[in-house]
Amino acid sequence: MASKTELSTLAERVVDGDRRAFAQIYDEIAPLVFGVVKRVLRDPAMSEEVTQEVFVEIWTSIAKFDPARASLSTWSVTIARRRAVDRVRREQSQRNRIEALGHQRDDSDIAVDDEVVANSEAARVQHAVESLPDDQREIIQLAFIDGCAHGAIADRLGIPLGTVKGRVRGGLKRLRTQLESSGLEDGR
Amino acid sequence: MSEPDNTTSGGDRIDELLALAALGELTAADERELDAALAADVALQDELDADLETAARIQAVNAVPPPAELKRRVLDAIDAPSVAPAAPPPVS
Image (cartoon, rainbow over all chains, first blue to last red; front, side):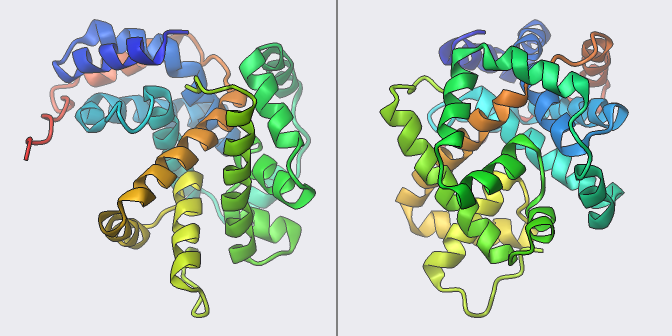
């Protein structure tokens, strides 16, 4: 994986229309983007379509990327999440989404997770998530690992929307502290 | 979906907006509200950036390689005449 600085340098070249730099960025972050989109949407074909949309947005909006505020990976994952959620809003009713999320993970998901856990960054993040208080952990897992929208989480757990949002916020703050204290400061 | 609760205080509403931003679920109205809050409180931008980074790090656990042919489709898509990088914002 390229460093944050290397990705930022590539992004600068993309601003000038450098397609080769864009292709390098694709190679670096496509698994992140596709993984986020697929977790939210589940449907492989739709996930590919939205991933393509995400990369077109990265290409057209790269001038808005500010390396002082975020890494390119963070910026791209944020776009991916937003676009995937937008697609859910457009294409599926929330009820269908909840039903789909009731399914167990398929084998490919488990294989991917196992592979990723071998990576120390993923292992530390998972450890940090697991160490959250139960109420925050459940929501953080549903939101960011299982890819659920907050409305679906509220319906699934039978709690108010505001509670979901509060626990998302509280969970993220606590996780940030834990990740920082574990010395993991080179997040992508 | 992100309709503010009438009993929500200002600070709670900001927390709601930050949560929605991390979830990728801001509506256009939410975005305008958050932008206004960010303009009024410089420290809030750091909070938002930190939340987005933490959320991205969690979601990176889900990384999975896309089908190989998707790269060609993406590169073809950006070659469309109507798809060009936007100019950088003017320096004020």
